[in-house]
Image (tube, rainbow, N blue to C red; front, side, top):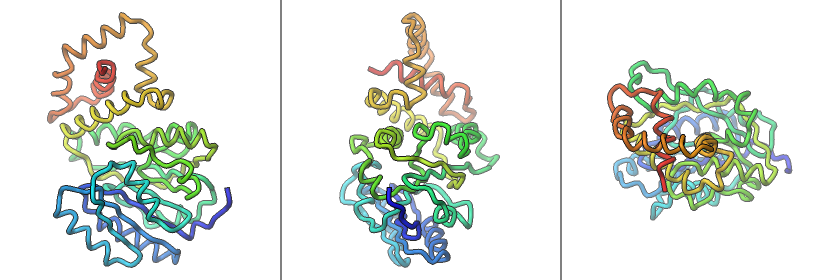
Length: 297
C-alpha cells in the first residue's frame, strides 16, 4: 500500500445510548496539541434515549467535530461503514463510545507509528475493587494479561478487535464491516478474517483505550447470549476464528456432546442465576457459553 502520513486523521466513533462528550473533548485536545489535520465524527445509531442525544449535541460546538444522529437503527457494523463514508482523510481511527483515553500521548503514539494497513491498539481494564462482583469486570480482568501487543501479534488476524484500531481508507474500502451483523458481536472477528484473505497486514501495538463501563450482570449475560446466537448463525464463516466454535467442533464423541447438552438443560438456569446474581462464579461463565452454543438449533 502507498505510504500516507498519519498526520491526517479521521477519528470515528459509533454511538448508542452513551454520552461521549468527554471522550471527544479529550481526543480533540490531543489532536490540537499535535497540530495534525483531523476530524472527529460521532454517529448515533438512532438512540432511544433523547437525553443522551441532547447532551451529545455539544460535540458540534467543538472545532473539527461532528455529531450525526442517524434516522434509523442499523447496527454497529453498518454504523461503522457509514462513518467511513462520512470521513475525509486517509487514516481512519475507530473507537468505541464507552471507553476512556488513559494516556496523554494516545494519539501521538498512533501518529508516530510507521506501519501500514491496520494498527490495533488494544484495551486495558479499569482497576476498581468495588467491581469485584461484576461479571463483565471479572471476565475482562482475567483476560487482560492476553491483551498485550506481543501476545496479540502471534495471531494477528484472530486477535483483531474493533474497540480501538487504525486503518487505511483503501483497506477499509476493500474490507468493510459485514452489515448482515445487525447487532454488535463478532462482526470484528469476521473482519479480521477478511483482512487476512485480502493480504492486509495487522500490527498490534500497546496503545490501549481503557474499559471503564461495565453493564449489570443480567445485561451482560443477555448480551453474551445474543452474541452467541450471532456466532451460531455465522459459524461457517467464523470457523477457526472463535474459541467457542473450535471447542464445540472438537467434541467428536456424540455421547460427550449429549451429556453437555443434557447438563445444560438440567442446570443451565441455575448457572445463569448465579452469573446474573450478586456473587457470580467466573469459572461457570465459559461452560455456560459453550452449553448455550451447543443447544442452539
